[in-house]
Image 1 (cartoon, rainbow, N blue to C red):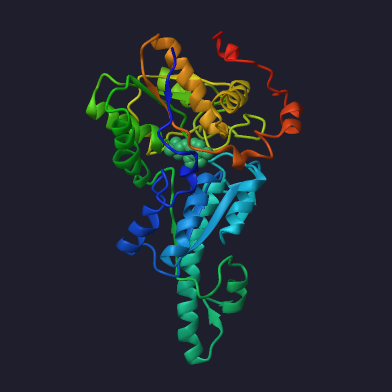
Image 2 (spheres, rainbow, N blue to C red):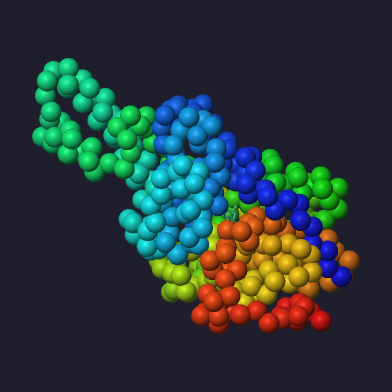
Length: 358
Ligand SMILES: Cc1ncc(COP(=O)(O)O)c(C=O)c1O
């Protein structure tokens, strides 16, 4: 009854031309002059996008600085450090808070650019033998900075709002799915982190064939389900930008948001489903046992969504979803038996009975 295509190899997230188009972001920024060689690309990320950016930034002669919520699995921060990125792990707070990880990342890019102009002025002042800029000592200002003084400015990659994200899925992921299925698919479903995947793919597929149904699968703690099905993020706790996404909302990482991003706004969706943490955990174990796939929480949630769509459409349909994260980046939480037990998420299913299938 159920056929789920896996259009990407699991190693995709480590491929240089990542699905989010991160490899293009520094390139385009360099091309436009927004970023200079020797500059720093900053990003606020639960991990995966930042890992892609940190991988490609050095190849463009740039540094990468990442602000990551401290509830993200520790191994993601370790990978970022191994890639040479500088990282800040910060408390998860609402997007309206100035210290939300995305807002800090935006600020860091500005600080890097200010540092560059300060250093430039300092060099000019040195020539005049003075150590003051606007009444502050140059050394005092430099001590507060997170970047070396030779840094050549900052650029905030802005995965949530930067439409290069949408375009990479419209021009890359969508066509890849179309080719691999020979255009014979009935539905697509994915969760949204920034919304880039679901927006780019849904728009591409609908442009190709408007009969293809596109859906969102939404994890606990996210307001997008209500937005898609009822038009508003209407509950108090899910009011846009207000809800504190905390570690107990969900075990998933990198999916689910409580605000409308520029990328998500471009999605062409026919509906949405909700998925639970327990279903995601069970699905990941089911796919490991039955298909030899070791997947992360986003991929597991996507597959839960694929089953929901399969049940809704009935037998004989081809449904596509995406495996966007491997289990390797989820060893300390999603694939940790002690952590799961502490949170009442120990898997016990033998098959797909947790989704009502025998
Ligand atoms: C682990 C993980 N899952 C899912 C997504 C969702 O993709 P998108 O941001 O395109 O909505 C991301 C995005 O960064 C991610 O890092």
